[in-house]
Image 1 (tube, rainbow, N blue to C red):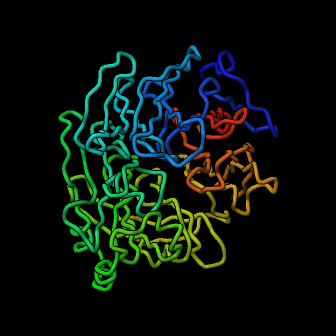
Image 2 (tube, helix red, strand yellow):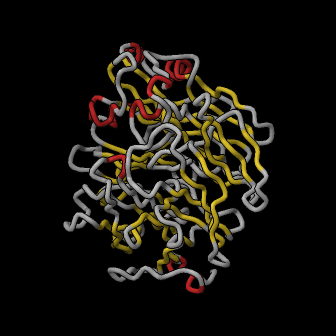
Length: 423
């Protein structure tokens, strides 16, 4: 285990159960990507994070943020790229490729308002522009997958890129022009893996097709399975507003509905895993089981409160995981014993100070849980939900480290906990 104490300050507030360090104190307003993507480079030496503008405000088309590289061996950091292709929750969707010489993220051509992915060697500055955009990179670093980053704001802010409103496509019913896009890093070429129309016609019921026909329908989350054999993707739909509606999640609430699918990267073996009828009960944050055999999620399965749940890839076996209350962004260790999650500042599990939230550790053998770190997450602008700071805890370094976001000296920052004492 590297000596973080040599270069980084400890976070000691509320007596964390494990050693915790702030890794980005020299760069104000930094975040890592998400709870399914490690910011640690393949060698374990570098941390790649996104630096937001210092003031929390609605990003305007063309506003820029920074890609920051921190050398964990020396503690030194530097800005390696400036990008207009970002939003508040996931930044520029930074992913590592197959080596420390491949850092993948989004940028935006502000003349044509066209987003694209960049493959940067952060150690030399050499870079390539790809045809497609990145949401998630495959485990072997050979491919990236993404829905249309321009349309994400139709349903929810924070996950795509910002362009002028009149440059955002509108899809009324199902379209064969957009859907899930796959890009090969070696060639830079992208292809439409599956269109929204094809996904609907192959995998949903006649009743759902009728619902789609009366709705605006957009692809959103796209996630590779840990073994690289499949891709999760979601379709979100809400009553047809003829392109006049943005941020449907905040306007419609339960009227925005979700179907979650799985597909192989060659387009075969498509299945509707979690239909909207389940999400209608209340749920969020689907991700892959560590063995790629199905999904985990938060779901109010029995309408008795949010629980940690899981299911198989054919949709069967939908059940709760132990006695645990669902919150935030849950993920699990492949040893089958440990799980972690955070929570939102407005959830019941948050502390009553309105400022701090727990990160919870689940023991699936003993069916117990404990708070292992308590973090401040309230930002100056987070009365507007898109500006909220989610910890997004993510396992890294063969599951010995955990990275997460929090506040440090009044600014967003990225932290690391040494979890190696668990095993």
